[in-house]
Picture 1: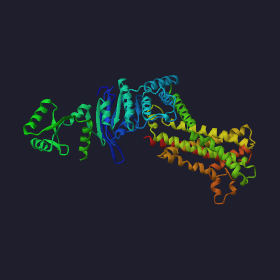
Picture 2: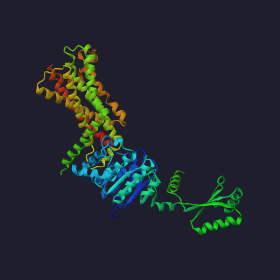
Picture 3: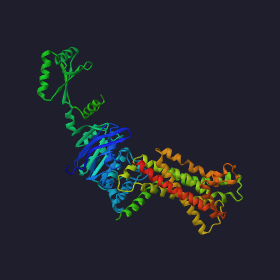
Picture 4: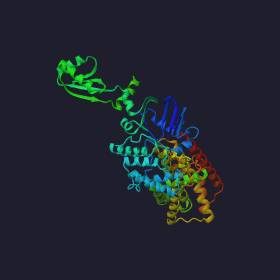
Length: 310
Length: 254
């Protein structure tokens, strides 16, 4: 058990006949960044809404910051902040007013809420825009304000539901920087995303879910290891060499005629690659190019989710 | 500090929010302030000449205009509530340790404030146009109280409609009934000029007693049983709409 910031066992939720979550167990240590990864409709948002005491699960238990979401929803809400999929900010209030309002609602005095708003605008690089209505902000600025609003009272657990969905690459980088800063401040961050790169970049531990069930769990590297190691790809100089090479390797690789290339599993060692090239040399297949691929999280993800479809 | 203290403090914060947003929402502000004045001019100068009420038309129509404008204002309220529900800010509020429905209180209070401003404006313009009420201070207070009750009732009704409909546009359209009902009352023409089959409807819908009460208080026309009918109607509508809004809010955010 320990003092994990978030612990769930067997969380289930159905809407009508649709089973959205089919028993999710999660354990997130305090101070870490946890990435919940999955395609649209996987159940990510429902899970976050259960953990933030907005939706009641049909079955299972969930402890957030030491409080049971079913029995002590108010205590949970005091200990968390939630940043949803759409930047939940008031367009017709200024950045400063949005932040000060949240401070007041979180029971800060008026002067304290104002000081905090000013400090957060500074920290999220919005000081100049603080007196303008949010209507005039760019997508990245809105998201940063959205994150800042989550931090008004520095809650120990922060939920970010798809924080960069719909942002351009530059704004995404800005949001990532903001998330890293939060993590450096010692908060526990529970992040959902459909971008593997985002989970890879930000999360200490990743859980992949698909259609309400867990398909894989681990660090980014552990997940990449789950897909059989690395592959070496050989591109032959001409058609004849390609034919000879494919014949020599037998069924041992996957080949592409158009590109005259063959992919073979490897452990990535120089020795193994040298042996492979020697073998090609012996049979007279002339190799033009050699490259080694590490599987990306995308490969893992596709392999796992496609496997389930079949 | 006690929970009650913070409940009030949170409500005040959210009322401040809704008021700030009201002032900056130029479209809605125009709806709440310019439209009433325009309608007043239209009724007094265009329709008024053709309507025989036994008195100068402006002396007849003022209470109706105030009520009609509050009806228009209700669509802004429904839209603001619906907007909060769809754009995700409601989840932010609900993930705070506050009573979620304080958000609705904010909208309703801002709605009544907008309508009050519109009312003052309409009454001011009416005075400039030659309206001469006969009311003393007590009657004035009673008339404003009646109008305030009406505004509170339809503001809660608008909040409930904003929660009932899933899109912002539908919520705005749903307040149509509130803006249409005044035409089917004694607000603009005496009920006895309507066809006989329409008269019972006009006489027994809530707007007519409210209009008759305000007119009676301000102009000295007979009130009779209108005042308690109006208070009954709009008291009941307030309670029903408040309960409906609370139930719908729970359901929408479950």
